[in-house]
Length: 280
Image 1: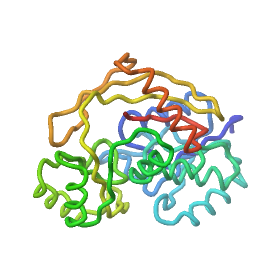
Image 2: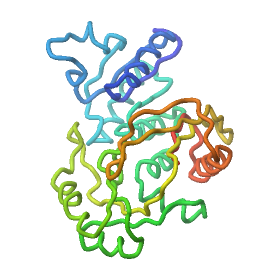
Image 3: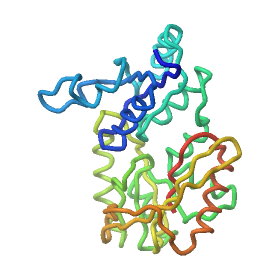
Image 4: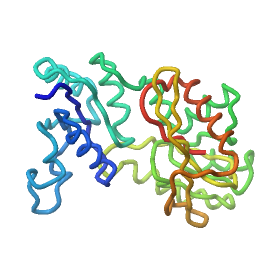
């Protein structure tokens, strides 16, 4: 085994997730891949030896989503024999588990308290409000009636979005009260991600704001936040706002203010370790 041992908790199947795994191996790390199902990452008829999983030195099959205590026990037992230096996840669905596991095993990692806020859009909005950091008006809703009340208060158009999805999935502009019914019904009827992971049942109604969509890319180490640059975005027309493409590095108007708000937010929620992708 090499001098460093990194353990991955699943990953996204796009190039970014694969590059994480490949990059770790190319850096000389001993790579362990813990996954709910290795077959999930294989194309039809493909073998592990010819797939992206060939970059893993060892594969552990374990529930990475529904049994946190069981996951921790498996990693502790495995780490007792093969000491682990770091735990990482490349997809939102596993980043909280990775943070909790790192903390439980005494390894460097992003504090779970910060990750929990980042993984719940309502909790993030509430925290920003408490800290007097600019954020749109918002309301947590669990029914059409609650959404109608929120729309009346916030005004139209407004935005309806899930609490814990990514990539603009389920985000929709609401132009009038009757627009709430179909997306809320659809959300309630499909409360699972593609891996069988349960979504938060509530949704978020937010103030509709026009402007450029950008993200500030950072790496935190203690109180130091290193800004790698800014990514701009091109999104599709209303009502869905799907991200079409982006460019990096970008120099949008208001860049300094965006960086200030981002660093202020990360420090305020205790996000003091690792990379962050903060959208504004």
